[in-house]
Amino acid sequence: MATGACGINCDVCQLNLVGQCSSCGPGNSDLAAGKIAVQQRILGHPCAILACARLNHIDYCPRDCPSFPCDNFSKSEYPYGQGFLNMQRRRRNLGPPALDPSGRPIEVEASWWDKLAHRQKDRVANFTLTGIDDRTGHLRFRFLEREILVDTQARCLMEKRDGEWEKIARPMLELTVLDYFSRVGCLYPMGREMVGAEDLTDAHYFAGRDRLRTASLMARFGADADGFAAAGARLGGIPEQMADAAFRLAPFPRVPVYYLLWLASEEFAPRISILFDRSIEKVLSAPAIWCLVGLCNYHLLSNS
Image (cartoon, rainbow, N blue to C red):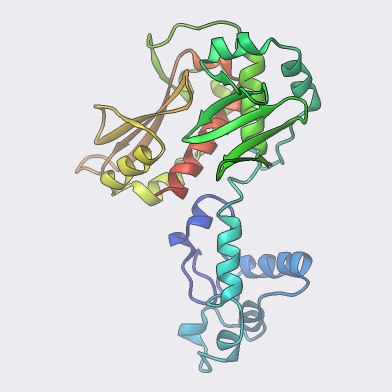
């Protein structure tokens, strides 16, 4: 269940949709027990409301507890106090969870930086239609309306914020950038064929339940074609005349990602499809494609 003991419905929280936070669940649930253990380990203490609900065998405080609202609500920083708001602000800037499809942490190997450092930057820039920063000499490009610098000396990515370059820790973006810039070897022809993940050579990597993580997109946009189109537009998406709403994102200048939304009809449930230009499998590995889609999904949800 997505509603916590405090009464907050996590289904409508952006942090839950993008995978940065999970529901505490009702007080008597296994979710609550797990959440308390995590809070104890990370914070040194559990949420007072959740701990009280579990101790007193209460599922939902507003519904089941005769003492609601008690001091745990009026004096606690969660869920309605400054601590909750600070947590929301902090987590909304973390980016998507750096986990692979199996839930393992994504690790960026040093050898990928080695490979890129030995490539000629002007060739990489020409093949990808990206640029070279005049001041630093590093590769520079726009990723979904964000200015990104690839510093091969410091082995990090940097993002331009308020006119200044700041180091960012985004393993999914780092893996994708290094894989792309290290792999691309020419200007591959584009526009010949549009394909889904199931049509790629490494389709098996994308097999399984919701491997491209469209469920969160459906939860947010399944009945909101205008909101879907607006979210795409905010990321520089170009409208496409397909489905009930569709647009083309360009996370890299020569790597388009297509998003199509079909609203519910009498015969079919709503659905979202994610498509690629066939050339994507020439320039990105399957794990990098998965990370790229995860990043696009995250930014669509966080900008909705």
